[in-house]
Length: 250
Figure 1 (cartoon, rainbow, N blue to C red):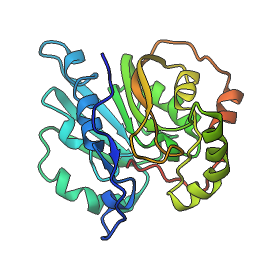
Figure 2: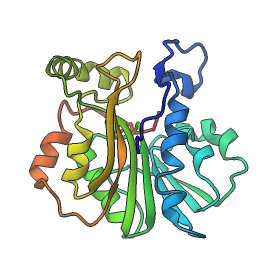
Figure 3: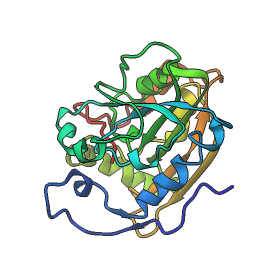
């Protein structure tokens, strides 16, 4: 089964209003990515007949994923370190279809007991967490033993020429793009934290500049042993390490 939805294109528009949804990447078909990926993977078919799912979303941002959490979600807990996001989420969270709790928290220090969640979701968030290796280990900790991590992230290109430009521009991008790193190898980071990727696709989004348009999309499960020691994970996650603690999803 292909995870890749059709018609994902850069719209090319510049933000004309102080709306967080328009400040960041304006991508034609991005909502289709969320719908096609989040609904089937882990939250519906994988729940089983009559099953229910307890979900954690990292970097909730303005709540763009909210419409895609369907009836089998028992409850949704969201974390975001940015207190300013609350006013942007009000219109989407006013009447949720299931219990919804929001915590102001850093992804690298999740305030939850071990094995709390069936599913963790991250969309366009891991690029901006300063200590992404620690955040992924925290994610592993709070997942149930048979839990699942769903991710849609942009990151390091397989093309040497593009990678070179990603490395050059990441120090600038992290300052103007809310901490965003262009050059993180998301699959290597995820597996290095001990998760096992069981479904995966990577591709360039049509029409988007390649330095920021290489997508990593898939799901990973718990139960694997870490494939990289802590110092290796730290080295990867600190590539052109950013300042501050931005990690709201886009």
